[in-house]
Length: 371
Image 1 (cartoon, rainbow, N blue to C red):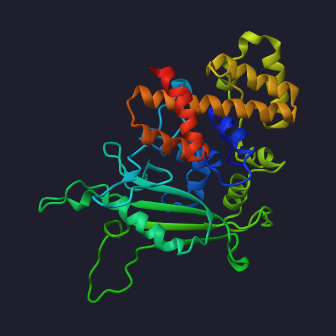
Image 2 (cartoon, rainbow, N blue to C red):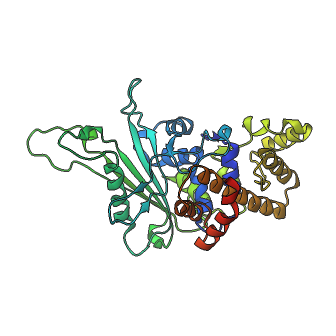
Image 3 (cartoon, rainbow, N blue to C red):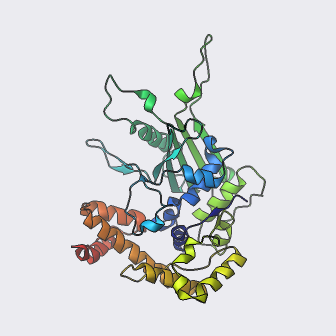
């Protein structure tokens, strides 16, 4: 199978995601890894047919989403960064894309000029929020397209517009007949009078993809259309299962990543023995643990201890501590960059699934440490 080499950062998000029973902000975190996105994009984007997941991962612009600053630059190479995910007009409610980024369009790019695809990935807990998801998806795409141009004038060059994809992954409240289906909506030229011929690229600017899951157990069979995509997404969107990492490791291999083990060489034979065990099993069974100070050495040591001990209680405890480290880092980084308090609170609620009151409590606890 076309497996990718996983990074420590993605492994950490996988371990955190494995404890999430619902579609919380924590479980969405895993969708910010290029390895995960490459699997999804390979399954739905027409321009990427025939390309390997590694090639697709390299197409993704790692600087195209600027949501929060990385703690360790050495592990930021697979964390998606990108465009302003917020669109605001006077007297309009502030809305946010779940995740927007740019990726190379290999069909239109040349050695000298890169043409991008603009991709919006929207994981949704319910397919029936009270209105058709398809309408919301088209609206988001229209806003994503229009955001590429600044103030429109008589001199605006509309040929600069680049194609937009909206990928909506819906989990629950799906009619039984629609479960495990994929729908594609796009602009097509349906009628011509005379001998007119227009290049497809001049109007093929919006594509909406609706992926409907619907059950914790996916009963599709290997070889069926969209099997690999749906099998993978079913694990990601229903992560609280024993075989979560087994399924993920069919797509992303964490055992062969030499970078994963560089930080633990000072621990002598322990790191090598763990690595050999992982090579045999094909997956890494560990935990994300961090001391409250957020020291990388403590985090690496915690992961190794979790792998060696393999105790569920220790794993859960390590993930909880790791979450606190992440919350503290987000607050302190944003305070140092003078991000407004209200914006930081929104980020805490979005990325860690916190209630407003709990977000404020963490803010008061950690904000002063940055001053």
